[in-house]
Length: 575
Image 1 (spheres, one colour):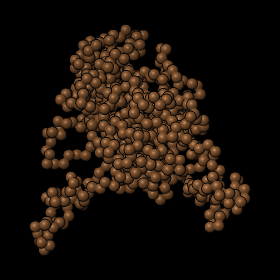
Image 2: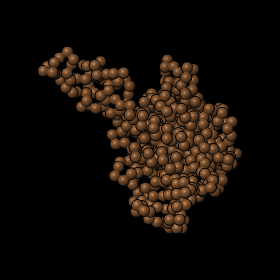
Image 3: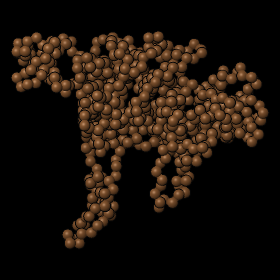
Image 4: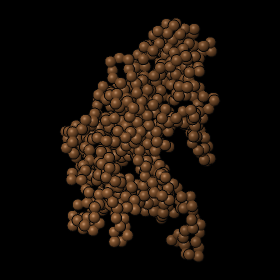
């Protein structure tokens, strides 16, 4: 059996039985190195099918470690009776000990013999010391819930601001005792946001402020796999590394922002993506690379946000109790019971976006395991962590064990162990397994749909601050979403803060960003602990960029694949 490639370069393949293949061989002669014209004027190239069929690389979902928190909200922690202040107290209690240890090592040899003051309000004037607490940014432009309650609700509220920062901002440091104002030039380049736990070295001024000369953070959290992945050959692995494409390394695919149902949808790009992941597009070499992709992670915004149609809010209607000669102009809200059916307005609601998304997910789940996260535009709760989308809303896709809905954020522990790991977690491995033995280490992947980064980006001026720098800072702060619950809505946890990074992930994925960015963050501790490495990947929206990101699970190398259709929106058309 042979493959016949349409030479019009549309990437269309067809399988022919051996009789037709033999006829083509006889009719056209030698086929391995030449192109021929068939009877209907189509240039074809016959490519032999390999004797061994391609199989997808198997990876398995392993149980999370005891230090990795769960973002699932169940009956044990689902309560709205507690104040949000408990989150700050728990956060400070968890991270303060690490910051204090780092501060003592950092400032023990400084002239002046600085001392540690355990409470921020107990600092002494004229004495060099360092304090530890939670950062609070006092910003006049930051939204205030008390102002929202006090305003006149008959007047529409102002649109949300793109930036909260202004020259009138001030930085505070607080703990259980109180709050003290921080001043100093080093704060300007620190890129601080509300909720960060840090240590500050300085001296109290005459007016009661604390003048900071240096600051200290917790640093990157421990990484269990640090000692297993430090090889000199992998230190320079970055984007589109040619050497990383060869061999039997497993890859994971990252994508976000399908926005199915948007006014300018990316249906063509989504179809190309489905065919690419299924190995139905591209040449033989590309199909070999696709067979190394073990699973797909969709980081939110799969459905487009609902846009209200203002023109549909008012329209001429004829109530049933009036004749056609007495038609009146009424608003839709007056006759809401008449125009609503099955709980929704049939004039502005359509189930087609969900059906279309389910169709694409079914095609993908047939080929490889798919992990779907909720995003800000998806039909899920607004507060973080967002809970998994109901599987029932995806129709036939829910019948596939390779399809799983995740919380946002979520940890995914990937390994190439054995089927025992699959059985212990209930998550599926790749749809087609292989007998090849993999040398891939276990990888912890942290994924969220971008809300924490979008919120922190409003606190800081840009330029010079970039989204990639903010994500890198969260690793050194050891906190995923420090601005929650101040300006980022989250669940009112009482005895825990799941956003604290107790373990440094190997791959840190942030979805729905304006553009693709990546960086390999490396931290070398002074002790016996191995080198910590984390690959940060900012995944852009697929509808705007048409970009699929691939990450090598062994080397953490990154490459991108762009999907575009000439003359259609979404993606980039390469020259």
